Image (cartoon, rainbow, N blue to C red; front, side, top):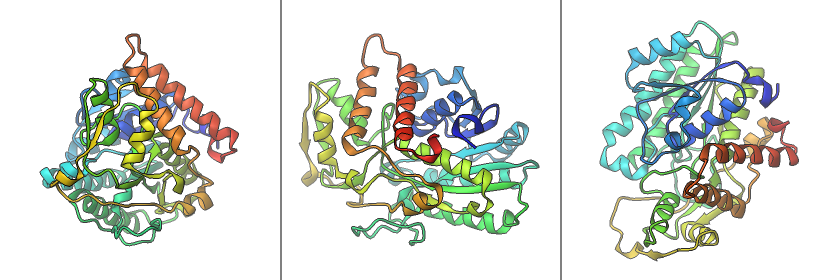
Length: 365
């Protein structure tokens, strides 16, 4: 099956469709001819990628708290989805210290509720459940984490993702383990995603964009922290790739996959800001790491994505400079008086797909 045909006229549910990754995935799937149903509690930021693109006009926009099992089950069972992508989450490490209960209830029980809905489906469905690279017990070594490494995490967000992974594995082995299971489930792990339309608090790219658009100074609380930066379209292509592979190959059912960039994209926060500086007229930043007394944040985290390359023929395709360039271009488009962020978002999806085709990636054929 091909990407440009497999989703045509298929019912696709995206939980967390109003979020950063969910809104990009909504546009991409809509462009592929899918009948998209988005399930979210609300729009998480103001401004937001979801609102600026007016995505509610092109998909089925449904407001349900994924912690509400009864409402969630009624809606999912009435839709009868062919595909489901579970992205809904409390996604911020620093916020998880402020409200750990919300973080655990959303990320753990919300995921269990989605699994419970899948358990009672009466038709075939391919489900891709997204957790995070932070689900690993990070000891900050220089090697990339593999899918078989220990799960954990010192902060509420990271541990909530590890706990969600345990629940997913338990449900798969307990309720979806037969070869005739109607539901096939794959797990996607990605992190440090950047790109246009991310407006979340305490994230370096939106912090820079919001400050520089007002000629203000960006405070860097952890400038030497190293992250595997990747454009939002990189892991999304992985999720779509995984769903296509699951549709055709039951042996991938229950498997987890890392989706991350090449090792060259692992750069410090400071290097990211310096690269962004090339695309902005007014740039001011300062190192406030000595004054930072906030909660713990990891200094180094890398993923090994050999498994995705071997089984899915997937790999990230953008270098660090292109990743920052495409991210910056989206925000510059947003701040234009005559901006059309929907068309520009769609153009970036099309441009990214063309790059993947030129590199002969299987999913882009």
